[in-house]
Length: 80
Image (cartoon, rainbow, N blue to C red; front, top):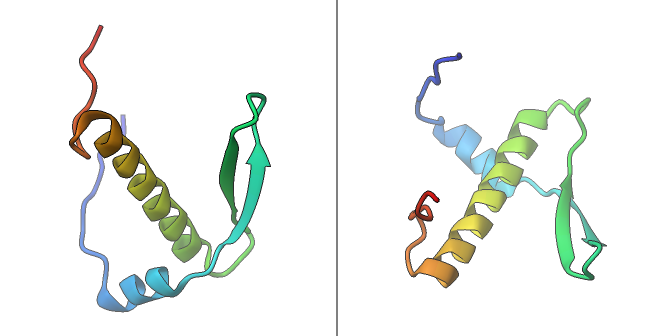
């Protein structure tokens, strides 16, 4: 198992992540629900910045959904 390493993101990289513009594609799933997919270019020299931006947007979306359902953005559902 790998050991996660936590460290602060430098201010310059934070600004680059905030300014990153991602390609979006809206697709419908089998139920007709529209979802947004972020497209990343693995050969890009800015892949780390684009990946960080996509991850940040995904986490924000999940927290909004959790808050809407449970009233708290960081509470996990009870185990069954």
